[in-house]
Image 1 (tube, rainbow, N blue to C red):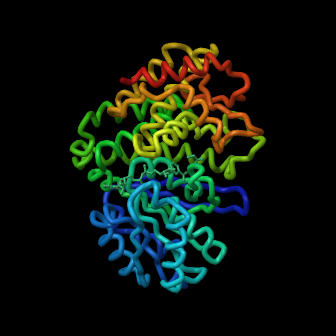
Image 2 (image 1 turned 60 degrees about the vertical axis):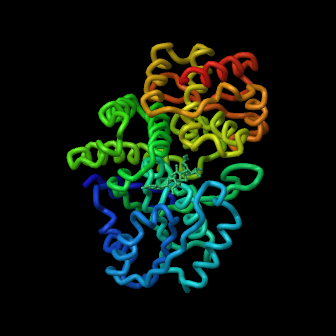
Length: 385
Ligand code: NAD
Ligand code: GLY
């Protein structure tokens, strides 16, 4: 079974990410092994869709490991990653009688994980939590690294905390029920991560995309696919773990190519697209798919990235699946929406660009000519349809 260790130098913390098909049934014993015998209660947070597929198995495994298990299903969707849901989650934890040694278990995609993780970070000033990600995006990215939080009306993820999970359990079989758009969304994040990670990670991701083809669920449901999928997810987790180990809290002054900020490749445009369309048109990863292409175009247009490297990126994003159209959006409005970006520094957007596949560079937005930005946006948003 692939196993990735996340080592955090501050206070010498570490946790494990375990990855395998069918691992959900081991959730209880695995959590018990990490939390010890004094942990009595497990508060399981999920949503209706995920719970219908996997909830009973998770709850039964926790109960079998002697956790008094309570359940709260948060409402479905990104708009419920909110302060209102946080208040409801905290009420649930209080009513469940959770104490400091007990545990919050997040079963779902990034929305459930971010919200449940933030509730665990703030309840009693922080209690343990376990991530059980069930989307591709959450398995390769959101469940690893300890960023938790909720959205505000003013923007995404504007309130949050760094709170590392004590354990991440990835059951790759859960991907078999993932709707096609969620698969595309996860693949786009995987391409993004490969592009800033290493050529090897990028190629591994691309080759899995090629093998999975259009009907990834069907391919995934075959026994022999599990090993390959687990290995690729492990490679992504390994890369993210290394970045997080070196820059857990995304230090403001860091502008080197191993800064945690490189994980935001594609996100400047992505967040603007999401905001401009009221979070309705794009799944997060779909917007990231466009975002990587725009960042790739800028990189090429300022003479940093070779054309054939950009073409590899385009091909990889195309392989992820169809993206909702974006050509109708006003370039001017996208540029305006970028100005409210959380990643800006001193009022300037810091762009994550590419020197080549596998090597990112942080560039101050002031160095990017406005006309070049607009033409790169046009080209990036057009290049997929
Ligand atoms: P999501 O959590 O909304 O899940 C997508 C959809 O798939 C939902 O409808 C969900 O109910 C459903 N679903 C989940 N697992 C399923 C399964 N196995 N079978 C069938 N349906 C399933 O979306 P997401 O893409 O997982 O996460 C996006 C969120 O993650 C965003 O809020 C983003 O900000 C956040 N995020 C956080 C980090 C981080 O480091 N904390 C990183 C990246 C993204
Ligand atoms: N997804 C970006 C990060 O975890 O830093």
